[in-house]
Length: 111
Length: 117
Image (cartoon, rainbow over all chains, first blue to last red; front, top):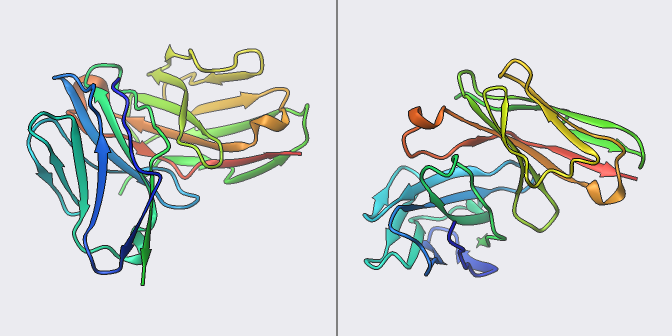
């Protein structure tokens, strides 16, 4: 699976959009981009995933660049409850569904 | 919403003692995973089951760790003997059978926080 690079931490004001970047320059054509988050002392929670096209669900939007070498997770209106560690993972679809987590980005949403 | 159940939530044990963690995946999920998460790091995959069979235990320290899923439903992860370096969060996750899962992610439990003293 391709390696990802994320900033260690980011701050965001409550009510503003949080844009979390991820670099995955070695991604291959059949690898998906997944985002999970982990709120303190809980298990990771699935947020969203995509292959080529931008995706949106009730939690977030995922923007993948045309060359697929990077992506951005967007939380449109961050709340204090969005404070968490966010993991960007790229995964080969049929690699027995395994996810390999890096260290992620700690998002601090401030009042 | 269906959940992955784990117990106990917290466990304190003395080094050299045996300790066990239990996981009950979402009903019908064929694939079950155990992860270990050291404080400040991302989760690390220890073992993966497909039904009752182990499909990947390459990162499991087999001299002291064991995992089983005898009936292909719930699972137990055991450490014997526990060492100070085993202090971590142990997370269980489950997902549908590979051919049935579409492209979705999988669901984690809340974990067991182990402290070895």
